[in-house]
Length: 251
Image 1: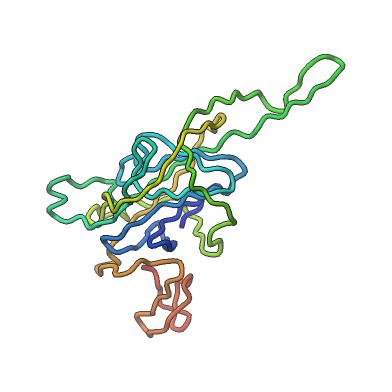
Image 2 (image 1 turned 180 degrees about the vertical axis):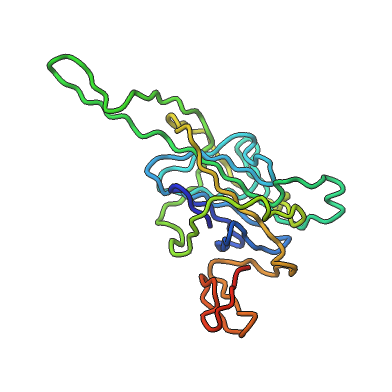
């Protein structure tokens, strides 16, 4: 999971939260996954989601309410999601047919928060109106809102990594891509938000099916415990170094 400016992006597989390290999430080829968007702010957020460089919201955006979550199960078309996200290996045959793209394997989430509400103070004498802030018209726009939202506290707070991007050199362009998976049923409806802040916040996650030169055989979740390749000891799920010999346990 990745966190920035009161917004969390989580990749889930088989209902479990996948671990993120240095912007990378490891899962086997052929796995279906979903993208969980968590808004920890008191304002609503409007979110754009790109996968493999393509907007998966039908060139639109979705609303994530304050202190709430929206789980995107797959690519949306006209407010409906009918197939899940599926991560597959980008073979030579696939590369020859569709080509290699710089954004292959990347999940890019960009969010905008609503501007803070305006408070007005009225004085009887003299008859002037003094706004605490300049008046903001509520003209943010109409965006998709999910009916499958859940409430709750912060997800896995102890395992949150405070980073927002993945370096361009981390992407080989020859790992995996996202395609249409099995059938699902998720509907969105239109809703209205107020004026949005001009600045946005971007989180990027790289999906990987290889760990160094080895294939990933099972999803690496936040509870996965690693065995040290040097001494064989198992470490806690959040450990980056072997507690016994000091070997780095980064994927």
